[in-house]
Length: 316
Image (cartoon, rainbow, N blue to C red; front, side):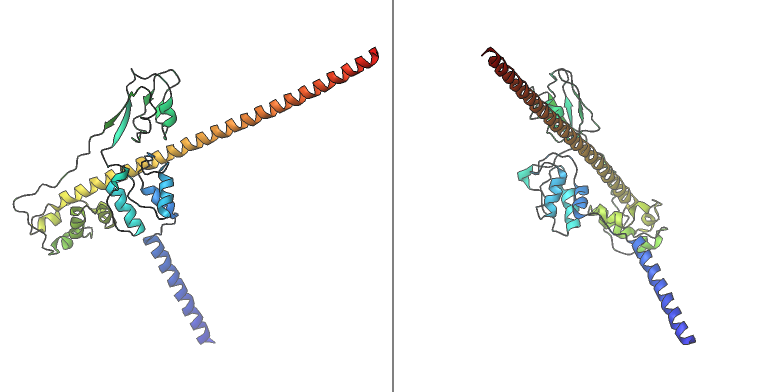
């Protein structure tokens, strides 16, 4: 009997250990539960410009999930292609020039003295970034504009300009005459007080693989300079880490703007759906009113016909 209880206890302890290990793994390596379409859509720039041939970023995400090419997004450019290739385990390809060329971020600006208040641009804007009323001056909310260019074609007086925003400055590493190639000595790894892999971080940033640098905890670097101090090749490692952090922050800012634009686009679509539903309700109400009026007219005509018939009968 004691042997039986011992076996049961051992099994219980083993099950408890396995459960704890599974919980640890689930916490350490969380799985992405979002559907594939949502993951793809999150990587797109959310300009809703339709340059890819689809009416918005989400329809393009749905098409990619069905096997369409990942290189049709000029606003996203090489960065978006790289992210999509990593997500879908595909080979990275160049941007398809048939859909446009990647350029600087732009914002629309209305020359207000030339605006005639036609509201065509307001109707065309997919994120409701243009405000104004009929026969009144319009203006663009700069922080909400995605630079999609959809407001340009419908403008009858060509009073909208696209202004390119200045490129953000990067803290590029300053090379010295004594700097040499990395010899993979590993001294920087031993010197790091927060258990990072400075050598690998340097390679990732030098190769512009910033997503891999982030996965290797670049943000945990305290920029103490100990790795730089022990480097026999005199590589300014801290400057490379600072560059990587700035790029990662810029990418996160872009993702936040994209998520914000996606929310405004969804609000825009919901508003249009509500307006369409209201117009349909009003149309049905008018149809019912017209049918009711026609029915009443028929009843009146029938009553008049009966009255005339009675009158004629009395006269005879």
